[in-house]
Image 1 (cartoon, rainbow, N blue to C red):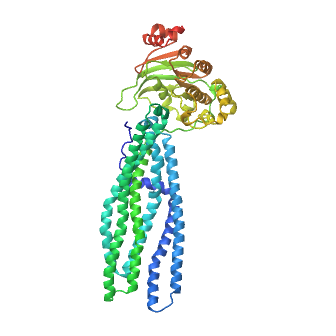
Image 2: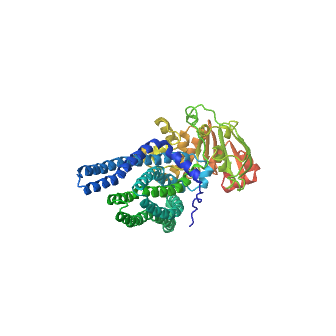
Image 3: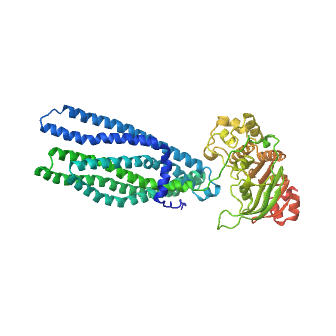
Length: 594
């Protein structure tokens, strides 16, 4: 079974990458500078060690005391190690802070994405950008930058000191390093490409697992464990393959350091020995130069690591930037306390008008609404009926501004929904989705999800009205009982009642019910029908429904077909005057209730 993966991550220019990296690095630049300074101090003590060794050899040749030089060498080693350890801790801590800030910013943005963006992107891939991609930032935004700075400065200082000792041997060393460094430069793009593809594969793993766990009962009932396992394993193998390829290139890059130093050592040893024999330099100078050569491994390693980490980081930053470029909503919190119309408050019910509305989900797709027009005055119940695909649920999506109309206007209280602040608009609406989702957590957390400040008295009232009080009494921990992933510990009817209770606790002026009683038994459906009828006295209720009991209660019924409104009226009027409604009524035994 094929699973749609994320689109291939677009490549960024060097300027875009640097600006993005600096944006993550900038808030921590001073503490990173402190860590870099401590690292440089540690490196400076290391640079002094070959000079101290030279002095030690000279003292031995002159039969002088070496105690002072040995103490100095010991002090340099201890101090250098301690200072570098503190610097390393500061950088590691800062790196974790960079990851935390990146995750906070990305999470805040992803949870404000417009619904069409989420529908075009695999949720598992978005989750992998928050988890694995942000983790890769820790190396490139602190360690890579600091390694490049400290490694570069240490490399220059070492080269300068080696030049003072013997320019000829320095030339030999640089010749070897430049030769192997050129080959290393060819490897870097390979690291970036392999890492980028590995991260994309990790995103596919998250996508497949999210899909599987989201329909776990269906998976088991279908006997699809082996097939889904194969899909996950295929994505995992893809990630492994690209990860191994990245590791191969990084290993090649790292081994080039040792190769360059070893060849340089052999060349310096041979040429340096000849220069000692000719009297051009002393033995102590050759020893010091060889120590500097071995010391050069550290700054060169840092530069190589910085380059490798930068390539890895560019792959991660490109995926993060792609997520940050997705279109978001601006949801300001509503001004003032939430209304409580559904709980007996005096807030006026909202009116709804669709004025010649056209809509398509995105460019290139056919229209879903073709000039939809209807008017719903404040209070009362309006039912939407029609064949599947008529555009009924889309009406609710346009009211909530999950989508914006392609043409025409959607008015709430005579005001275009595009002119409402989103927070204020949605605070006035209670919405029960068709599949009545329940979130992992406690029953109380689900009930107050849309009204976190709801009092215990309001919760008890809504529990009674939605026939949930007996369920709460039977649960081992009452309202604090965990309901499982997607409410798996509740029945379908219980999940619907929880969703309705959650909407009522919000105290809406406009209540949207999309097949909200489809999974209820007759007793609970009748009870909730009475609750909805009571709420409709003070609140505007729009309901997508097919059941006789719900449709016949409505003050008006809007009949939709093929994205158009074909009739509006009462049940009796429509059975008499509209052939499509008459057919739907007969099919669903609606006519028998007349």
